[in-house]
Structure formats: structure tokens, C-alpha cells
Image (cartoon, rainbow, N blue to C red; front, top):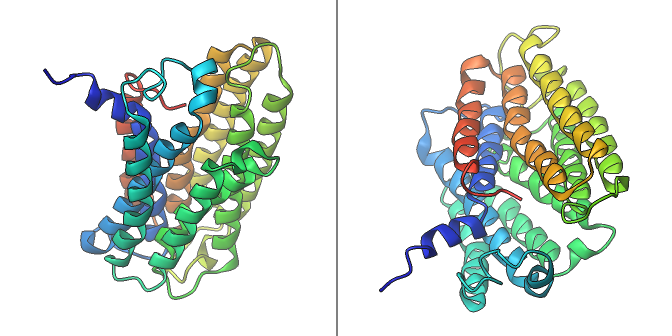
Length: 304
């Protein structure tokens, strides 16, 4: 009889809630580049590429980390035996190859190159880069490239867009820095360092959002102060600082994992804030809607 736990184990392995946040990146990038939601044949492959590459990265992450997980997280899908190691490696490497092909089918000439760069960055992180001091920056570059994947359809990208991509990557580097303590108790160094990096990145994102008219050539009337975008970014800052404060007061794995989860889920809102600044609230709402799906799934499938 087939093991009914197997499908759920695979969803846990690839961190399904996080896969959805990756979709928000490329969709936001597409909209920031002036793309239309009415062209699913163009943005659909980009979103699919983001999701496949993220899922592949998570599968490889746990496959390469088997020995560590046997000691620290024995209930995870691979060390618990619910997902075979060979199958995880096969799915992971297949996903890294499939991602650029999906991006190519979008019709963008730059998208396959960006997706290939993203696949290489994912492999570099999973195969050993995460254990080095550069690990958080490598992970940050993965999410920055994911946002750039959607932006790759634009004929040109202004400096605020490059700033947004860079600060987005820096924000993720801060989350990754924090996550290095998610299995430890009593240590706050990574928490404080990761939080400081995230707050600096948010300030950079505020600057980028305030220069919406110089993003990627989207022709529209822009307010001097993008109120909705700045409000969302402020709420993101409040959420991550509040969660981090709880973890700093009580530095146990459960609290730290909550902080990491809050940071990951806030990525969708950062995407939505940028779209609200550059386009409008209805387009931003399309991106923000992904958060609800990620949140609901995240209540039953872990994301860290």
C-alpha cells in the first residue's frame, strides 16, 4: 500500500509556503517592468520558473544537509526516511535545469540568462556556500535574481529598480543571518545582526519606492510621496522588529523560527509595496493575494 504521507513529505521538503513567496517576486518584477496581468503567457512562465527553482533549491538544501539534519532536525522528510535521498537530489537538479527552460518560454531574451544565473547561485549556496561567511549574501543574491527575473522583460531598468533589487537581496541576507540560530537557544548575536541588516534594507527600499517614476520606464503619473507603499513598508518593519524583539527576549528555537517565518512572509508585502509605488493599488493587490495562500498553507506545512 502506498504511503499516504509521501505527498505531504514532498511539500514539506520544498517548503511550499515559501515557494509561493518566490512566485510573488517574479510577478512583482513583471509588473514593475510595465507588464500586464492580461498577458499570462508572458508572466506565467516566469512565475513557474521562480517556483520550480525555489523548490529545487529547497530539495537540494536538505539533501546536502542530511548529516546535519540527522543530528538537529531528524523529523525532516529526508532524515526521517519519508523522502529518499536519491529522489531529492534528482528532483533538485532536474528543477535547476527546468527553471531556465520555463523562463525561455516567456519570450524574454534576458530571462533565461537570469534564471540560469539564479540556478547557479542556488547550487553554490546549497553545495557549501551556506556554511561560509558569504552564505547570507549568496542567499540574498538568489532572491534578488528572482525579482530581477520578472524585471528582465523591461527594455531598460533605472537606478531605483537596481536599488530595489539590491536592497531586497540584502533584506533576505538578514533573514538568512537570523536563521543561522534557529536550532540554538540563548544566543542573540545572529538575531541582532540579521535584524540590523533587514532594517537597513528597508530604508533602502523606502528610497527606491520614493523614486517610482524612474523605475523601468512605466509611463504614468506618480505621486511625490507613494503613501500606500510607504505604509506597507512601515508595517513590514514593525512586524519584523516586533517578532525579533520577542525572540531576543526569549532566544529559543521556536521564537527564532517565528522571526524567520515573519521575515519570509514579509517578502510578499515588500513586493506588493514596490508595485503599489510604481503601478497602483489594484496591481499590488494581485501580488499581495499570494500572501494569503502562503499564510494558510504555512499553518500546516513548515516554512523554515
